[in-house]
Length: 302
Image 1 (cartoon, rainbow, N blue to C red):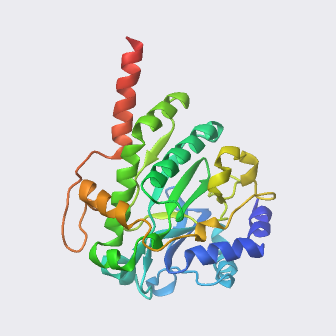
Image 2 (image 1 turned 180 degrees about the vertical axis):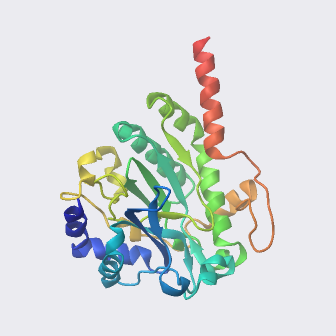
């Protein structure tokens, strides 16, 4: 098993993709070693409680070697990007967040991958209709997928007026509700296992491009938007993966109009941001979809 891990991370492209994505983000290194409660360990700090970071591709192998006794396997990086990460307080301060990557988390079983891809297509289509197309990327991750918007799609001017986490949360919530009817249809096909969730929060981590999954022998690959309809699960196999570097694409300010509209409709992250405590305007997306699906199934039954 560890031979696969070592062989994978020795690839220069893998280390380069992880480093480029993780730069300025708070990194999490998921390990196979477990704590006293049987949970796999997640390394987020180095000595002196300094946040774990990766700034260049050489740092990937250094991290693997440094924590080799814990059998590291998966690289995560925060949705937030920070001005500095020198001490624990830096990642605890929302004032230190300079940008945030919105991400729709699509969870499903691997066997129902077609429904997962359809959910991705619905989100991508909804974003396109709202004028956001050049800054969108799709990743296959484990048994599900992620749809993300590049953080630079929100202009510096907008980010200076509205906190980046608020922007990201609002956009994910707003679009998730727009595609909710289509997601419910796909849930029926996947026997209710498909979920689209808004997991945006201050310490949220998502898998780095080309990282191995924490348990499955699959790779997190970026799928070109024009290849979604032809996606094949074989693309995520470690030895023959197919990966696009399209996640780097963005147009500055492309998502500004959507973000402002979403923020007005949804509001920002529902907990304290900048000292202000807010409540959700709506139920969680996954709860709303589950409720709608249950109602639909009851109607079909009778």
